Image 1 (cartoon, rainbow, N blue to C red):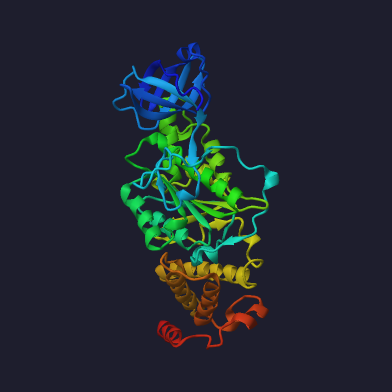
Image 2 (cartoon, helix red, strand yellow):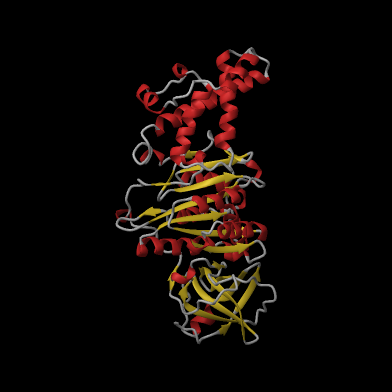
Length: 460
């Protein structure tokens, strides 16, 4: 470990979790700090915390202190370690939980002798990428049927505080047909961390999961490292072992807030709403790690991005929308079919899925939109036609059977359920869809069930 035996005193100031060090004192000892290099802070002859070089400005070096600076004296000693931040990478990481410094936090055996990999490396050479063409099944109809999750996709869940986004993310991690799930928790309260850990354990999938977690009570600095740790491990699993890796990150707004807090402490000039001017680049550097590698595995990124005040123009969701390939829009406890979008779904619909997938997806959304219009007409006391009543019934049953987050259906069963719902609510000739598909997939039972006929008679 280069220069590990050389330490010096030279702390100039301590602001928040940022320590400024006199670079001249280091240079006198032949030490030339590098950007993002690790340093060890020692106090009273004992290790205090790891730190990382965040900025080099002429005669000053700014260090981000992982454990926070509470109780740190300006007479503490600095020791530059000559290496970048690393994540443990071996077969021993499965089922383990690591903190924002990349060290085990689950009271399991230490992994000090296991090999490590550098984090925050460059994005993938475009020549090593292949076009997204494989679907990741989640058994959630609002995703699989209407907005497919595709391997190598980077896509956020736009949500607000109080919505069950963490429960949804855990369900996707459990049900997705990925080889490995790498979870990154950023600024989670302990209850949310426990939800993920317990859900993975009870579902029996913890043995194929790796978790990196920064709790709300942990140092802010470590929140900025969680995505890099998770993505470095995911990248190695995909490239070296050919794994199909699903990376789950929650919450990227907490990640951006941590960057803002550190930027203010280093007196960076703020931009929109106090966030730093490089917010787009910081987010893109992480999201662009999503990749389907030629001749190897893939990395798919699904993140949670909370919108303060339900404001989609907030800098974090606004910048995220320009980087990612769509979004899942979660509000009122359901995935909104109108606000959600997967820009890569056309690469798999009808190619990896059944021939009726594209037609049934468009037809269901069209009739649901018309059902919403019929509900608005009913609320304003307009006279409704018999077809409007059919649309009302369709919209209500669509929400119950498909939009509830606890619904679990394989894709083929969900497509069959779509055809069944159309047959329950409409006459066969009323449904505008390709005739050959109706001949193949329209259910054999009567067009309207008995309950539907009774509802229509009463409403008329």
